[in-house]
Length: 589
Image 1 (tube, rainbow, N blue to C red):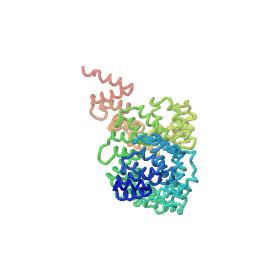
Image 2: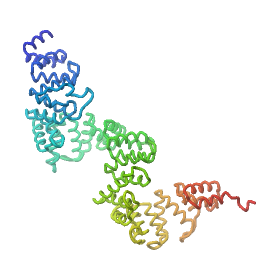
Image 3: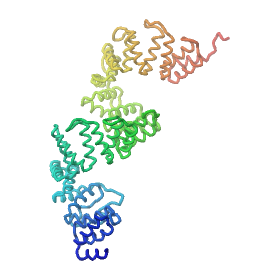
Image 4: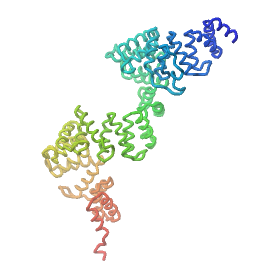
């Protein structure tokens, strides 16, 4: 039969092609390939295209991208629209380069067509445009979709949005799923009402029926947001699941979140984390951040900072600002990675440069402590100034801090006060700092009454530092009447939030004075609470209480420990107390 087939091919290349097609349909690719080659060498475009596909797919012949590309070039130059469309697609994917040479009548060498079998080149938009336009003009719906894609998403000099939309519309009308998808996205640019979104949805449905995961994903997005239909979280989740199972990375992220949070489906933490990890491993930076977050707080398991750092690094290296900030924060405290201020500054800088304001603030704090690059301070001040000028209150506060402390700019209390006053309209931190400047007369005349009013605003917002500052003014009658009970209430609120200064102040008040009866047991409890948080003056007072047994039995051994801690904090009086404690008592002799 093989000899007969060869004779048929020699007599009639067209007959050889027909015979090859029948053999291919029977799955006899090895037998069909020689006949295809005979027809292709005779210049039949369909045969050239089929030979190219055989090489590209390894059907009946060892796979070879170079040979596949060479035969595609020949078929495309002889008018085969299928070959032209496929060439355009391969050029866009970086499989083929130099493809425009053949259309100009110069057959390129194999090494001009492809990088190696495992290496992809950058997209060749020029060649892709040439082949896509040929196919599109010849009526190929696939070619029309490819041409539209290049006109809309290609390099700026090639772009023509209106022409691209027209080609997408033609491709969609011809029933091409990629055309439906592209036309839907074009329509979405103008959709402003129910009817507009309904048209988008109809085009997506056509593409989704063909199994395009991106179309299925966007149907999920429309369904989740209620565009063109009523919101339906359950139906949206099913769309995301379908697209996720087809390998679409953004859908894997959405499906994982739906399972984790129970959005329209039964909550499934294990399944949700599995899909998030799949998306993260596929390169989705947002998914990597979420997995990192799970490593820090996932059920009853203890935090795994080292694994969290690995996921945050994936996201950060992909340019995700949330991942960069999280990684920088781990370097700040040495959790899961070695503590390293410079490395922390590096990742916080990356996040800050991407516009993350929290990272800008963290980086500013590092700069104040001497970490980071020399130019960071000036850059930070510029970021804050630009954002503050646009009405951002957080940026106004940060700019005020920079001006007050001379970070990246010349120290200027007057300008600092102006920006802090603006930020104080909405930020408790700014209200507190502006109150401090009013109280101290920095950048303006001192005004204790006004300072007390700003402390009260920040205190009402729950800011512990402001509660302590207001309590001090109430105790001492500064800027208004003395109000001891109200001051105690404020200090207890701040102490409940872990403010060691408030704890020390409570200890001082309960030691006696200010119209309060002394309660040294309570005072000692507050001094101890503050001392354990590292408050140096509290450590000194606790040591003194223990030496004298002011609230019970003396305990000189423990007193010595607290006084030594106070000494290491630079509390001058602690050294003299420690020296006196070491001297023998006169009564002992």
